Length: 464
Image 1 (tube, one colour):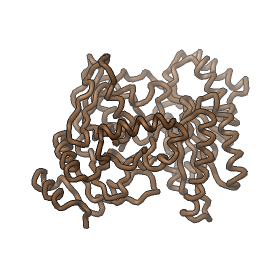
Image 2 (cartoon, helix red, strand yellow; image 1 turned 180 degrees about the vertical axis):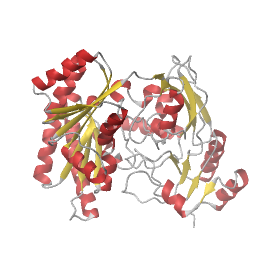
Image 3 (cartoon, helix red, strand yellow; image 1 turned 45 degrees about the vertical axis):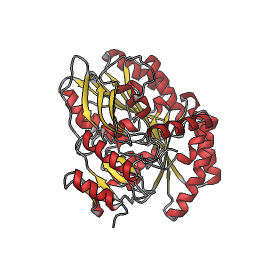
Image 4 (cartoon, helix red, strand yellow; image 1 turned 30 degrees about the vertical axis):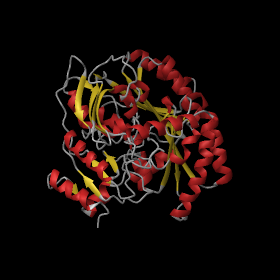
């Protein structure tokens, strides 16, 4: 039984194809959630448009009937930004997957918002180019969601965030009005860049329906290493050596702890390349340099005790196996327990002090809790996963982690970091926005929201 106004349903039935709106309970459950498990999905319906014109007509009807909407992409987010928990209409862009021909001269491609990230990679690769936005969920995440959350991922150290690789946007406002922002222009110095308002706004200002993506050439041959290091100081020391003295260009620099490794091995059949375990591991991917210089650099690492063990992938299969150790972590944590996730950002130089205080907080307040750390250390992004003790009730655990979040974010504020590095704010972090953003900033964000979405229908309750 839907809570939608009968007049709205009648208008949809009149103006759209029969398969446009779904009230099927299985669709509601599927499209009403993302990867988070905190909020139960309770959408009223799922809309499945095929074009910007259909999105525009739908939002005009939603505005006329005061029906709130939640934009939905691949639903791989971890901040409940795509959760519809209060009877909203989910607008899924999954049918909008068109990818235009790659403009090789301009280095661009225009795609619909539902295009899957990995499919865009393949499409561009046929022309010798790539859209260098890359992460573990690329096989199911969609371009519109990547842009709406300003996704980060494993290649930020080399290429930067999603916002650096978006030239133009087509956006539908809550009123149904369609905006074309910047097209395929590299330069457009004509006032406020409205395109950037929508990148990272989590669907609270409008729905991205198409994008002109900036491409770059495919990287050369890549080398993938896995190193064992004794502690976090060693992770940072190795990063310093790789950045300053390594005879290569770094494309990814990832780290994870022994607790992450153990969970991955419990969940998946993976090969641990080392005989002895280590407290910390570093996965380093680089554009291949001169072999002799690379060998000398590696030998120097061992001679100086910067690493205790290491392996270099000898072929693509081995490289994929090493990457699997890192990219399987989130999946493995969820499969082997209930993780409470936080992704925070710190200035890189502050990571040792922050992590030391974080460990002290949990040792004193929550003894015995397992903390699994991993992240894109080269860009200051730390993923903090607190695992529910097996004997603890889920509700009691969530209450305790809510309390722990205040302690974590107090430390983040102390070290001038961000409460969210790449997963956004959504529902899960909106209570903590003040730890990172000043009152004046939040007031300005509210003012922008009120101009573009005066009725508050776009992804209501998220961020603010």
